[in-house]
Image (cartoon, rainbow, N blue to C red):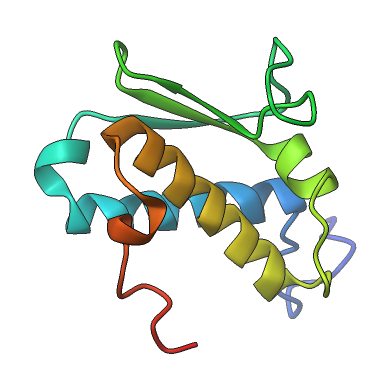
Length: 123
């Protein structure tokens, strides 16, 4: 019989893709709870790279479709083009959450600070 290389006593490995998708999903659920009517039919998706280059530095971090009620967050530009002062899991999570907040703010036509005013108040 064969077993996994890590053995049964070690926790399952999490990849960067898993961390990114879990953070997007958790932030989307938090925002759906805060804005249930506005975000009820919005789809959140994760893509690797945008098709077109339109961002201020040439590469979009997310795209918003008002007609389709859809937000696509692009993992590679968010992760690779970030200039984090500390490159660890907590700061990466905060970066991903901020991108989700800004994308939702763009969809709703609101200021990002108005979307989740209590989210980071403890900092």
